[in-house]
Length: 79
Image 1 (cartoon, rainbow, N blue to C red):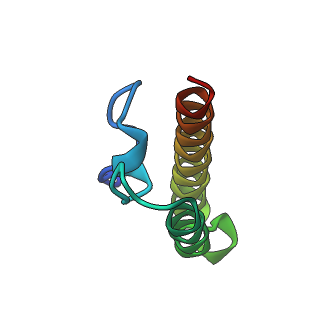
Image 2: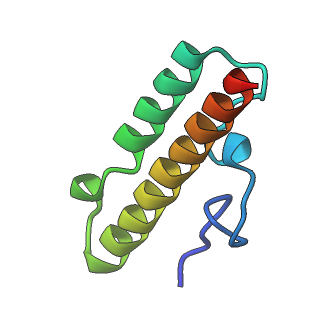
């Protein structure tokens, strides 16, 4: 099995780490990092079935992390 690297090792992986940004990154920087990661790990770029499944898992992890960051920032802005 392929090493999953830094994607979703634990159930509650640090979303900033998954998106490879710091907590003080701007919203634009976070959006850009997400888009770059999704382009790199897009399932259509995978060579075979196993890599495709891994790419799908990584894409889900990136999107989940991005959603968590947005929720955290929305909550902190409301305070």
